[in-house]
Image (cartoon, rainbow, N blue to C red; front, top):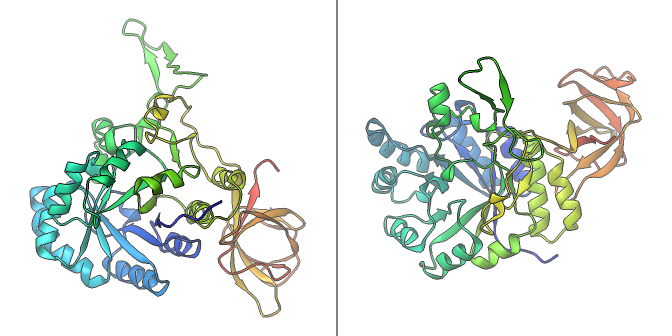
Length: 401
C-alpha cells in the first residue's frame, strides 16, 4: 500500500488515552478543557492538565488541540476572551470552535491562538469556508454530510492556506452534524451542551392508544428496532480518495472512548497511512474494538441511506492487560484489565504492527509466586517473554477463542 501524507488526529478524554494516542501514531491529539467542551465533564481536562497535556504532546513532537465547541450563551462570551488567552498561555496549538460569536471573541482576544472551525458549524460549501477564513480560521473541520466530490470542489475554491479536516472513524449522530434535541426533550440534558444521553441508540416499541399495555416491536429491517441508531464511520479503505480531494487531517472520533480503543484505532490508521499491513488485517484491527456496524457515512452520497442496525455494539477482541514495564530480568509486568490464564494465547498490540500471538508463560503474582490466573482488576503480574514486549503494549483476547 502507498503512504499517505496527512495529519492523523486522535481523541483523548484522559491522560491514559492521550499517551496511547501519541504512542500509537497520532500526529495531533484533541481534548476538552475546563470550559465549553462538547462532552461530559469527565472528559474535560483542568487548566493544569491542559498544560501538562500540551507539554506531553510537544515533547513527542506532536500538537494539541482543545475543543471549545459548545454554542455560546450571552454570559459565556466575556469568559471566552480570557479563556482564549489562557489556552494560548497553556501551550495549546489550536482551539476547535463551533459558534460564530465564540470565533469572533476568541480571535479578537488572542490573535496568536490558531482556530479550527468544528464540524458542528456545518460547512458544506466553499463560500462558507471562505467566510470563516476571512474571520480568522486556519482550518475547517468539514460537516460529516459533505461528499468526496463536494470536498474536492471546496478545496479547489478556497485559499491554499485554509486547511481541511474530516472525520474518518467513530460514532456518528443521527441528526444533522450532531445538532440533536432528543436528549434535551426526553431527559432535560442537551447534546448541544455536552450532556447527551444517546436516546437515538435506545430500542423503541409501538403503543396503540386504545390498547394500553400492548407493545409492538418497531422493526426497520432484519429484526432491527433501534430505528434512530446510526452506523459508525469507518474510512480505512478510502483515505487515498480523501487525501486526493484535499483533506490534510484525518480525525478519529472518541473523546469518551477507552485508551484501548484509541490505541487500536489510531494504530490501524497510522499503519494504513504508513503503508503497513494488508487491508484485511487493518479491517480486522478495527473490528477488535467495540463498535456499531461500520459504513462510509455520506462520503459517497448514498451510503447512509442503506441504514439498518440493531443499535448493539460488537467487538472481535477483549482488552486483557497493558504492559507497564520490562523488568531487569527480562520478564514483563502486566496490569490486568480482564482475566487471563497461564498458558493462554493472547494477542499483542504494539505501534506499527497488527496484533500478533503471545502465549502467557510463567505467570506470577505481585509476590512473585506462580499463579494459574490473573483475575483481580488492575492486579500487577509478571510473565516470561522473548524480549518483544515493550512498556505501553496492549494485550487482548480474540473473542472467537
